[in-house]
Image 1 (spheres, rainbow, N blue to C red):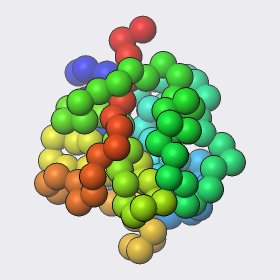
Image 2 (cartoon, rainbow, N blue to C red; image 1 turned 120 degrees about the vertical axis):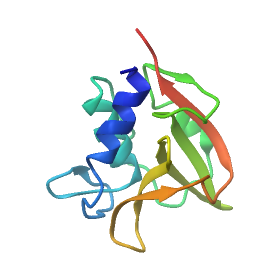
Image 3 (tube, helix red, strand yellow; image 1 turned 90 degrees about the horizontal axis):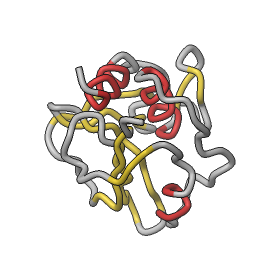
Image 4 (cartoon, helix red, strand yellow; image 1 turned 135 degrees about the vertical axis):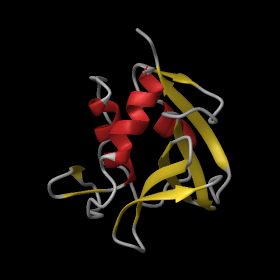
Length: 131
C-alpha cells in the first residue's frame, strides 16, 4: 500500500465523525483541517498542522505554508490533499480517494464521502512525501 493509499484509508475510517469547528480529535469532532490532520497522522505523518485560522480565508498560500513534509501534487491520486475554493473567501480541504473525496461537511454535520469529482475548483493539492 502506498503512502497515499494509507492517507485515503485513514480518511475513510473517519466517515461519520461529527463536524466540529477547529476539531482535531475524532472522538469529539473534526473540521476539514482536522480530517486532513487525522488522515495524515493515520498514515504515519508527524508534523505541525494549521492552527488559529479563520473559517473564511481566501489565502491559499497561508495553507501551503502550514503543511511541512508534503509535496505539491496533481490532485488526482488517492491520498492527495485538496484545497478547494468553495466561495470567493472560503477555502475547504478534502482527501482524494479512488471513488471521490472525503471531507467534513458542515451542512450534514459529519465527515462524509462524496463520490466523483469535487464540486469546487481545486486551488492546490499536496501529497505525503516519501521522506
